[in-house]
Amino acid sequence: NDDVAASQATKTPPPPPPPPPQPGQDDEAGRRRPNRNPNKPKFGKLSEAPAIPVDGEGQGYSWSENADELELRVKAPTAVTRHDVKVDLRPMHLVVSVHDKPILGGRLAGEVAPDDSTWAVSEDGLTVDLVLAKQKRRRPSPDRPPTMEDIWATVFMYPLPPKDFEHHPKNQQK
Image 1 (cartoon, rainbow, N blue to C red):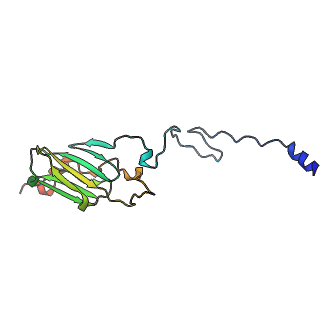
Image 2: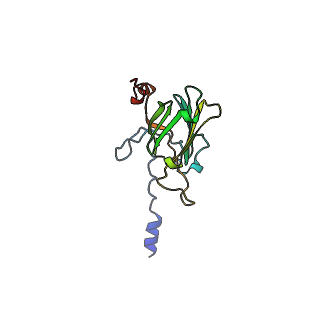
């Protein structure tokens, strides 16, 4: 037994593992490692993400969002009342019209709950303000807080360009 213990004590330790490949280099299996920023943090929960506002501007509108809703502010071509505005909102589609002429629309970047969404004309009549309630595929709970997957990061997946509104069937002169 003493001989076995002595032979185990004299064994040399295994060599340390090789350092990980640098971005753009091949690993041991010959696969190219993607050029990723190793210092870039990966966020799973919104509470882990930096406090960066998620908002932006498009042609004739601005928006901001959180995990539950998207607020959209659309510029009206002239001062309007709620009777001048029509909002056609479906789960994946939005069109805002003034005097029966579309001014903004397209396929949304995510699904909304039309019955839980609202809109109003600003007091000065120069903007149409919408609050689109996002349709939740997975409901947040104490065990599952909102994640970055709940953020769209854009309003329209396929916006209708303004020039298309001129050719919309509702805008054709009869």
